[in-house]
Length: 599
Image 1: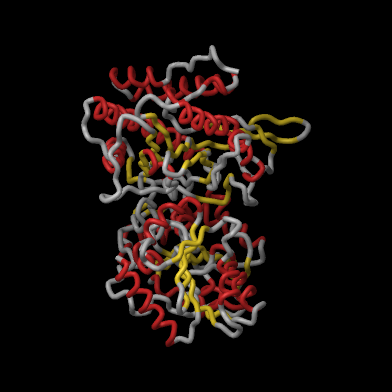
Image 2: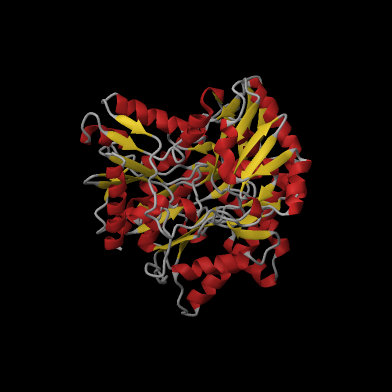
């Protein structure tokens, strides 16, 4: 692999030399600024060999460096070993930003080349400003991949299908009307939507263009007069074209977007969201672009009553599938059968696929045993897959796409008698999970204001985790969605009733174990006082935590009561879907915690 990566980087440097480019940046994204991308856009992965879903590669004439965040520090170190690519641990105090590195290592007059399709308007402006301050230049038209990726996969051509309104709860034309009304308020007559999950939500369409994300590769231009979906037209059956037409949308080839935008009248005004629209788009639109906040993310994030009912159903079926899966895992361990990390993932998928309305996984299952659990986004391969033994911890982070909703759950399981440290670590994480799950907060509260609820017990022990505590979750859409999140850095979207968000604090001891406890929570009204409206979280996920890992000696009476109440709810909600053997297993797993030693 080392020789292959070196050859690819050498070919890239050849293109850079011909284009008079001194450095280039290759992000892990596509023209839609997706987190998870189709194989056609896996440029950074192809050039570096690093398979994580986040990170950027920087290549100069004599250096190659990869920036990625804490979720991938261990994985990246392993995959970049012997490639000559240096790992830059993004977010750590000693790690410079990409801009800081470039401006300190390149001479005045240097040119940095990027593909403007892969950088947002905001990202481009920040980079350009940093470079110009050091008398350097930015070329936004550098074709990074050129002709060097000879067997590059084509754009996906999987068929589009309709997500029935009985699941989505609102017709496409109704959503379009709301979006255009909000667009007009921002001084624009039309809007360009680039994000694939937003397009899928607006039009109530789905596809299989991106693994685990039921989206179609497309752009959507909406206006009161003419709306157009830019997509590979072979993806659209005659019925889908008629459906789109009935909702006021015509179709055009994916590759014609820029010629269409270029042909718009000079007095046209097109709303684009700077953080989520490519620089190449604004280069084409010029003065016709109106940059502002798109109304779509907030509209999509607030689930309607039909969607919420569907999510409840999805959680019940997902929980029932997990009962069967974990029973099989226990049986295999009890009988001494070999159980690998890959087998754990296969078992979960098999039982989920038997449930009503199942469509796919919502992401690739993370089954990390022992030290692998400390790799936050670990993905087992044939080479790395460990055999699970009768001791230590097994971290399982998994989820599914159902027509009725999207699930995402993490459980940490003791594979034998847990040690005192394992129980204490787990319980500190769970105390934070419970604190967030039971939070009451006023209208207008953002995730950064709640994040410390989940971290406080770890912080008191000098412990922490570097990933966010919560992310938005789509409805039969991307498992990660905005605009809300719960994390240390500021994200302006307030937590609003109808939003589905994860609650997932963790703790990771390198080469020892990883612990993460994740449920999905729905923001709902709590009460109203003379000080305004207050909200709380309703826990939606339905599956027990491992009772053997709780150290009740460091738990309060209220925390123990929360666990017992949650487990009682899990049993009551799942029991109707289980046979007698499954119900008996679940009854044992949801017995009340002992409270004699609690403080």
